Image (cartoon, rainbow, N blue to C red; front, side):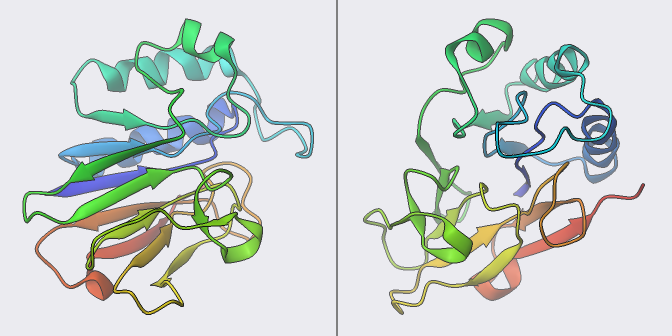
Length: 188
């Protein structure tokens, strides 16, 4: 099972289009969106080609295949749910991959492992599970410090990276946690 993981699009039509190209290239079995999809937020500058109305149909096109799972970011509002054709207002969700591994999906402002100013509120997870989060706009791919066999993965930000590169993530099941995730930098 191959899962494409993206976060923090923040209404950038330019970067949303780059993400759509990546999805076409990657051909994932599932797509996970970790929040902050349409609005740039009061603490961020406007991203390149800020045009949420152009991002809406791109994201809604992903929902048609039934392979999309999304969670609420700190910038989502009820109006976002009114224009998106998929649920996006839950603070968290879970996927169980085809090998039985739990992937806990969240934005990082309600649940998190404390990386780069994300909340330190780790949910109860079984060993060999992964916490997938966004929010910080900084890539993470490492074990949670508590040594519970939990892995933390942040794909970075599609449109407003705070670590220099626009990115998304790929997860491939059937591999050890330290090999299952990888970051992919989006081309300009």
